[in-house]
Amino acid sequence: MMPPVDELQREIEIRGNRIAFLLRRSGRARQIRAEIHLHRGLRVTLPHGMEEHEALAFLHSRGTWILRTLRRFERLASVIPERALTDGARLPYLGRELTLRVSRGPVDVALTSDVLWVQVPVRREGTVRRALQSWYFRQACAVFEERASALAARIGIRPVRIRVREMKSRWGSCTRAGVLTFNWCLILAPLGVVDYLIAHELAHLKVPNHSPAFWTACEEIYPGYQVARRWLRRFGASLVI
Image 1: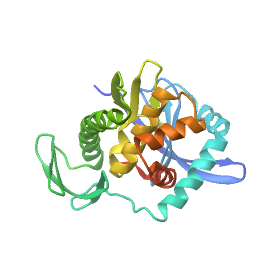
Image 2: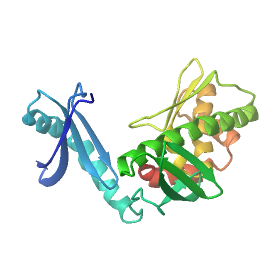
Image 3: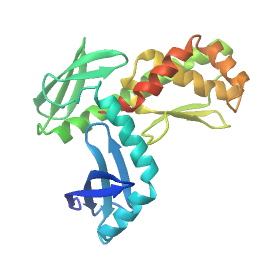
Image 4: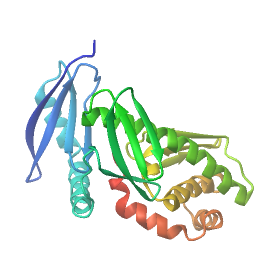
C-alpha cells in the first residue's frame, strides 16, 4: 500500500515577503524537498516524523533561491498560459503545438499529426500528467540520440553514451568519459534549442571550460546557436508539464 500524503496550505515570511506554499507530508520522503512550479508555486515535501518548524527553517536557508525563482516565474506567468491537462488543451512539442485528447482506458499515448491522444484509467490531472511525462521522456530519448549523432558528425567526434534524466537545476551535462546527459523537459522546447544544448555538451568534449575556444566549438557544431541560447534563458523555466 502506498504511504499516505497529507497536504496543508501554509505561509512563510522571507525577507519581508509573504509566500504561500503547499506543505506535503509524505511517508515515502526521506528528506525535506522544495520545488517551485511555474503556476503551482512553492511546494515543500516533509517526511513523516519531522516537525513543521524544520520545514520553515529549511525554506529560510534557501531564501535567496526561492525569492529569485518566484520573481522569474512571475514574469514568465504573465506571458505563458497555465496548461490545464484536460481534453482540448494545447501542449508544446519541439516547437509545435499539439492538441490534447483524453479518454478512458488502459494507459496509452499516441501522436497523430498534431493531436496527442492520451488514454488513462481515471481522468484525473495527476494521472494524465504522469502518462504525458512518460511519453515525452521516451520521445526525448529517441530524439536526443538522433540529434546528438548528427551534430557530433559535424566535428568528427562521437559521444560514448547519451542519457536522458529528470534534472532539477540543469539542462545538460558532460563527463570526461564522454557521457552526455540531458533534461527530458528540453523536448518541450523548439528543435533549435535542443540542438543548441546538444552542441553545448558536445563542445565540452573538445573544450572542458567556457573559454572563447569553447564558444567557437559551439558555433562550429551549431552555427547561430546564440538565438537558441537567448530563448532558453528567457523561456526555459516554462518547459514544464
